[in-house]
Structure formats: C-alpha cells, structure tokens
Amino acid sequence: MVLAWFLSMAAGLAQEGAGVGDAGLPAVSTPVPERFDFSRFAGLLENSPFAVATAAPAPEVPKENFATNWTISSMWQDSAPDGGKRWTVNILSRDLQTRMTVRGEEANEQGVSIVSVEERDHPTKAVVTLKKEGEVGTVQFDQARIAAAPPPPPPPMPAAKTAAKATAPAGLAPKPVSPTAAAPASPIPRPGVSRTVPMPGSGGAIPPPAPTSTNPSEIRKRIRPIATDRAQ
Figure (cartoon, rainbow, N blue to C red):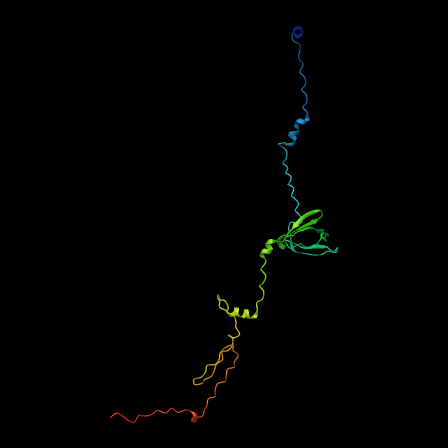
C-alpha cells in the first residue's frame, strides 16, 4: 500500500514538471567551445621559460689580409725579359719567419705577384701593392726598424789629421802640423864662438862648431898690474 502511494506521487510530479516545461521558456542548449589554433602557442614554444638556455652564436671573425705582417726589406728596378723595366721586391715578415722575392707581375712559388709600385719622395717610403689568389694587399718598409738602425760609420780621416787629433788635449782644437815646426832646433852656440845660424826654412846648413885647442901654451894669459907706489 505504501509503495503504491509513492509510485503514484512520483508519476504526478513528473507530469507537473512536464507541463511547466512545455508552458515556460524553451530549453537552451550549451554549445561545445571551439579548439584554439596551435599557432597561438608558437611564441611560448620559442621562448619557453622552462627550456634549457643555449649559448649565443660567436660573432664571425673577419679574415686577416695576407700582407698584414709583411714588410719590404729591399727593392730595386731592373730589366724585364721583354726589354722593359720590372720591380723586384724582397719581402720579410715582422716575426722573421717568412722570406720571399717577388719579381714583376709573375707569381712566385707562394702565388704572390706585384700589382703596382707607388714611389714617393724617399725610397724607403714606397708602397707596393701585391696580389695573392685574387686578394690584394699593400706592403711598406718598416719605419721603426729603419729609425732604430745605427748610423753609418764616418769616412776615414787622413793620417796627418788623425795624428794631430790624437795628441790634442780634450776640448781644444788640434793645431795644424807644419813641416818646419817639426824640424829639430839648432844647438846653442858657445860663448866666444861667432857663427851665423840660418833661419828656419831657409834651407841653409848649420856650420860645425870651431875646434877647441887643448894646448896649455896657447891658452891666453891674463896679466894683472901690481901698484908699487903706496901711500906713505
């Protein structure tokens, strides 16, 4: 009896609910949201805060020119096989590890040739343009090495000037050497002997001294008178 009563009540409530739904507003269906496009997450994949950091690529180092550390040790111009003129340049690296000779526009064993030579006011300031495997570079003389080089020795002096300079005191100019000044001095004449002494440079010969006698009888005696009258 009780079960039947519950069933009848449930059926009545179901009918009432169906009637209200029909008489009220129509039921609204909720649509399923659309899926976002995957490109929306592309930025998160590129700069993810959870990704492992990667090192930035190293910058590209510019290529060094082949003639950067080269200098000219010597250069000259001579006759070319075709009858013209050509330059010959000796190349030396700053670390003294590279030595080569370049002649004209013909490439040497290292593939280096001369493109042009720019002559300036001084031979040591010339600029030579070289070419190697399509690349062009310039070389010059090492001005620092030229400035540090010792000066050339002075020319040799004549023998007479060298001897005068060696005997001159410090700080005084050497006196000129005269042939007459270097002649030996004449001997001093003895008292009582008269002779003529030639002047220096006249070319006259000095006469020999007169012989001195050793005979006692020839020695001149000096007589001294004696007074006989004496005061009384």
